[in-house]
Amino acid sequence: MNLATDKMVPLVMALSVALLALTACNGNGNAVATAPAPRKQVLSMPAQVGQLAFFDKNLSSGRNMSCASCHDPQYAYGPPNSISVQLGSDIKQTGARAVPSLRYKESTPPFSEDAPNPDGVTSNSPGGGFMWDGRGTTTMAAQAALPLLNPVEMNNSSKEAVVKAVQNGAYAGLFKQTFGANVFDNTDAAFDALGTAIQALETEDLSFHPYSSKYDLYVFNKIGGVLTPAERRGEVLFHSTGVTNCSGCHYTGANFNGNSGLMTDFTYQALGAPRNDRSIPNNPDPIPANDDPAYFDMGLCGPFRTDYMPAPGKAHPYCGMFKVPVLRNAATRGAFFHNGVLHSLEQVVNFYNTRDTNPEYWYPSHGDGTGKPQANPVWALQPTAVPGATVDKYNDLPPVQQGNVDEEMPMGTGEGGEKTLASGTKPRAPGATPVMTPQQIADLVCFLGTLSDGYQPSSAPSASGRCVK
Ligand code: HEC
Ligand code: HEC
View: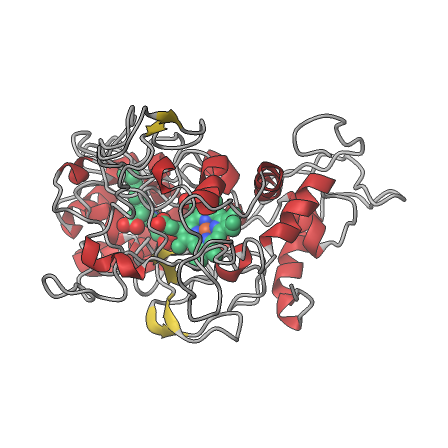
């Protein structure tokens, strides 16, 4: 990890704002407990408009949903519940993807098929852009049009309907003052101005990038001892190329705008997440679109983006790829991966650990096994499995696209692999010992917990709790 670069200066400045309210450290490195004074931030006029728009339910067809309904500031601008995919404004239709947090999006470069990797080593690949599939290709301003007009989100029939709602709303005056007295005369210009306003909010407002986690205090302020032994072990594991390789994709170094520790390299990867459908027993919220066995959400190659769609029956190297998410505030989420199929961090880390050694934990199997069904661990998606049954591995991708799934992730070095990958490592065969121990999984989850914003340092660290020792 090389964080000591001059690119960090803007971050350090942002942090010093965040830390302004903290008094000096006491002698042994623990920050003294002083409640930070509430920060008063002066937003530009476009950002003030953006703030009113972000919380404005009139911008949805049913007047029942604002951006904040799905991107809730109390939940790091992510979803306020653990439902896999949220209901849209018309209440009848659900979306097909989990709601991402809107924090730390200001560093996202535009989508490019040939994007440089921020680590400066990995070769260029598809990277950048907004949405799980990068189809919000350019700016957050242009991106705002997507939810406003999406039938499964805010469900407006036209730009005109949105502009009318602003024009008839409480902040029409401020909108005109900001974007010109005649701004409502031209629907396209007014709609674009609304996008500009929301982007101004998302980039300016410190609550969209507070850098106020325990991890920030630890890494950037170099306060030794702020991480507990369990969190520190988790951090080391997160960076270990031999064991987890987490930071190989969830990159922690300086990003393109100089900020560090976002935990993404903005690339697209295929992990083979299980299909979120009724093949999972007791599934609380299967994705309705998945009732159609011919429907597949393949990320970069469709169906929501259409520029990399595969020819019928042919493989395309991008099918199954989704954006590497920012892991900050992941611990405050209740639905993980693009289809929200997993519901806890423990489950996510166990998925990485056992996808290849025990696929029967995650994917449905055919009934050709022998003997009685055996109980799977509590965190598995499939509660039981019949020994010897054929597992429908990677069941959320058509068979012809399954070769894209990353077999090196996160640890192809385990024993028992039947073939050697280009890098010289081996995928782990079914039945091999998973590479991480339960203790290591617990430590990783503890480390991920340090990435949540709003950490309040205390002079007396608590003496109990699962992440202490
Ligand atoms: C019904 C829930 C819902 C509402 C309302 C909603 N969004 Fe979203 N938002 C989503 C989902 C789901 C995604 C991911 C969609 C995808 O990847 O296809 C998303 C993605 C995004 C992204 C991209 C984030 C990333 O990680 O690339 C931005 C930015 C965003 N929304 C902003 C907004 C704004 C601004 C509004 C209000 C104008 C809004 N959203 C309203 C559900 C919602
Ligand atoms: C090969 C690249 C790669 C590696 C290595 C990797 N990840 Fe991921 N991670 C991803 C991608 C891509 C997704 C999203 C997958 C999807 O939605 O289908 C993801 C999703 C996640 C999520 C869910 C976040 C959310 O908001 O839904 C967590 C948590 C996570 N990874 C943690 C880890 C940990 C811990 C490790 C190491 C054990 C790790 N990852 C290794 C690429 C990677």
